[in-house]
Length: 363
Image 1 (tube, one colour):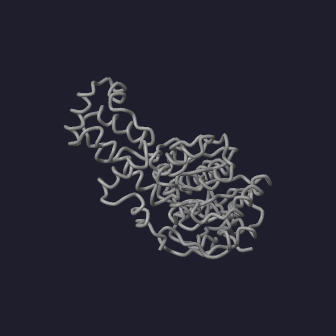
Image 2 (cartoon, helix red, strand yellow):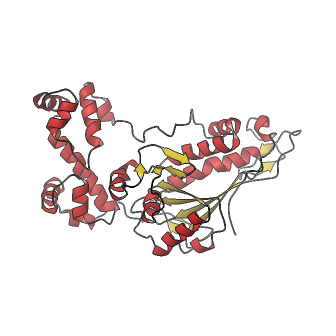
Image 3 (spheres, one colour):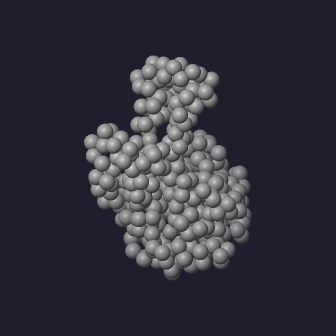
């Protein structure tokens, strides 16, 4: 069964060794600085085989961000520390969200025994999901395989009922919908979560940080540091780091109370606070909050929050299969009709028409 590991036999520390581009150790020196402390270290017996299930629309940047630190760890240690096998539901190539086709090693049902299995998805994570895949994930979980999710992979694991009581994370854009659908799961906006229950990360570049942390936990600080330096990363981000900083527009605002108000609004898109309640939280009167928004952003608090809710609703229309009414309620609208009126005023088309014009096609 094809798989990937970029490994080689442990090097002879008495020689000055170079490293080939494919990760295999070479007897010919290269311009890479000697890494004798890492290369001379005996390779531990601990070997990790990662299965990666790709669903159509997965984010290629997230996949490669997860794999590259593992490849570099193999390369530096000169041993098979990590191995990965790519699978699709039917064994055919999978189209990423950027439209590129990526060949896989095997079909879902032919994936060999692995100690870890990660579901890698992005936009519309359930659009191409087969019921057989849900049953297959159950079997893998019950066999002792540790499960993980990248980007929006938690939607698939949640749909399979495999996340109850667990703490997970996924891309910030999908967190509100996920929390509404799977209230038995503790979904947080962190970069990644690693525990005995599984491993989850937010997509984008966050898998880079998650893989680095796995290397540190499994093979020590020295190898972690060496891999990080190969990646030219100044420092690894902590799991509790937020996925998003405040926007540049918000950061440029001189008024700290206005920045706090915007952050609170962004965190309550699905259950909007009244402007009076928000003002009270900030220790302001309703009129004082109105004045700060007008001075800082040129609009009212209500207008700003309404805009953010409508933009979030448009994202859900494009990236999920939920009904318009469910999306309306998830974005704080009291009914289908009130949502449709607001959406038409803002975008010039109805939510149903917007759904027929997705801005993120697979290819």
